[in-house]
Image (cartoon, rainbow, N blue to C red; front, side):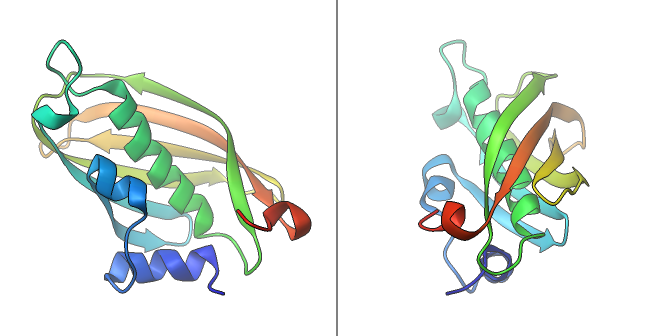
Length: 145
């Protein structure tokens, strides 16, 4: 069985499929290194809320995925993680844009870690900023996750 770190490396190289949620929402892992992961997506009308702008949940999805994969990049074999909480600031509206979400570990702890994510558009304008707290799971807690 591959570790989450190995799986992330394979996804970034195109040697393993992206997770099902990535296909559903339309994002892709494009860069994966220890403590940092980058997701990209093309936001379009299919992601719109009733006002016609990008739905905030989509920004949450791409930020959560980037921060989660940043966490996964720090894990050893047999370890997994779960997100304990997440906060996001929506900073500018989006209609159509090439979005880039850079998730990075701010503080790596043995059990609890802190991550942040900057979501920018193709003009490198900050669209959203998110943080989350993640918990590393080991042993029985990690089984089946």
